Image 1: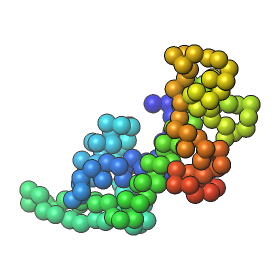
Image 2 (image 1 turned 180 degrees about the vertical axis):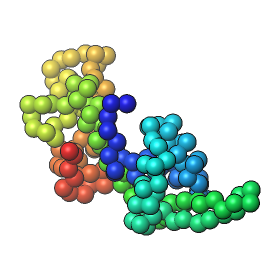
Image 3 (image 1 turned 120 degrees about the vertical axis):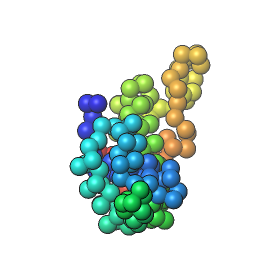
Image 4 (image 1 turned 135 degrees about the horizontal axis):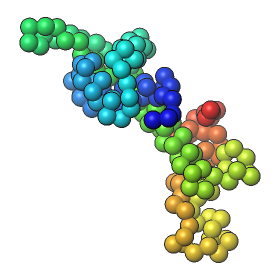
Length: 158
């Protein structure tokens, strides 16, 4: 993939993978599951796991497996809250980029202007069957106001 994966996106992906096993999962399995989504080496994964543990998003415990200790990682309550934030932020970010690719971003109206299907097209007389798919109106309104999915102010997208 040609796109770089920053620290926040790596954290989000790892939290999402670990969250699938409520009782926790171990490093090698996390690596294999993350690799189904993005290219990642174990030497990249373990600093991410340590950072999430330091940030109290993951708890760690050891369990014996085939005569050896295996380190398991489990999402904490703080980790679940962080994952929900990442999911909300990702949806907004993804909607903006997708909107740009699909022609739903009004580049003349400022950085936060997103057109929704039906609004401008209906006024312009564009038939519904050729209108671009639109974003959720509530999300569009929040994005125009510079708020995130939960309605918090000051969310920036770089």
